[in-house]
Image 1 (cartoon, rainbow, N blue to C red):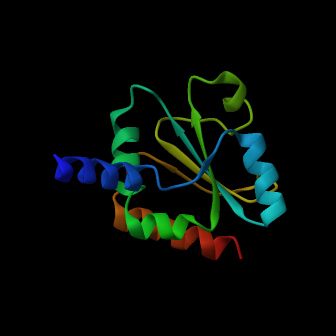
Image 2: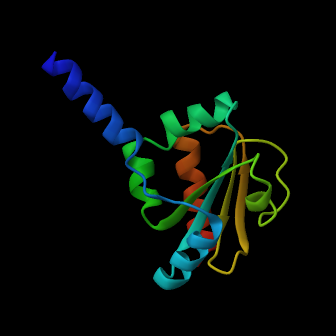
Length: 129
């Protein structure tokens, strides 16, 4: 029983390790204050690829470490108010990497494994300099 509880605690800790802010406006405020870039993940409740992206790629230790440099925010595609503040989204998951002034650095659509996602982060960091 102890092993099961310990395993659940470890899994829960790794799944929720990233620090996501609650909305785009808050993300912009934090980014300006901390001089960080923003990563916006647009997802949908029924999107299995979104769930895989969060469960496999974004929960990877290497990815989490790299994303510490960003202000992170999740947006539900069904949230019309939040979607109005973003460029057009052609599918989910969509990830926008933005500067603190909302200028788009990179946009990626779909599921990416850890290696490919880290490659995108590398590209974003080069473009943002």
